[in-house]
View 1: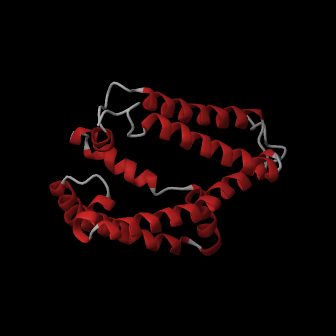
View 2: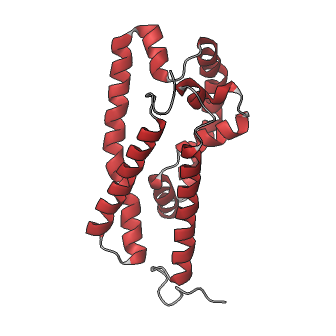
View 3: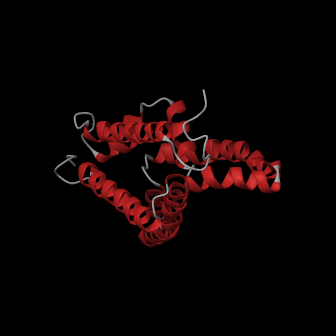
Length: 195
C-alpha cells in the first residue's frame, strides 16, 4: 500500500501526522505521569539517586539517550551520506571512554555520596570551582539550546510547510513552559520535597 505522502515525499501526509502527534503525545504523557508521582520521593537526593536502588541497565540507557539531540538525529545521517561511513570511526572510542569512566569516576562519586559533579568540585576544589563549573555548563547549554531548537523547527518546516517564523517561537515556548512546569513540580522547595 503506498504511503499517503508518496505524491510529495518531502511533506507529511495524514498518516505521518497521526504517527507524529501520537509519538509526541506518548512522550508528553509519560513525562506528566512521572512528574505527578509525588508519593515516591521525599527528598531531592531520593529523586536524583532513586534511593540508590535502580538497575544499571536503565541508568546506562538514560546516559546514552541524554547524549542524543536533534543535531544527532539530523546531522549524523547527513554527515554519513555526504562523507561516507568514516564518521563512525569516532564512535569506536566510546566503549573505551565509558569503561574508564565506569571504573574510575563512578566509584569515587558513589563512595563520596555526591549527587552532581558540582558537589564533587566543591568537595575537592572549593565553592568557587563549583560555581565556575556550573556557570560554564550553563553558558554551554544556553549557546547550544538555540541550535537544538532551530534544527527540529527547520526539519518540521520542511515536511509540514508551516513557516519557520511560527515554529521557532512555538518550540521555544513549549520547551520553556515544560521547563517551568517541571521546575515548579520538582523543585526542592517545601511544596514538593521535604528537606
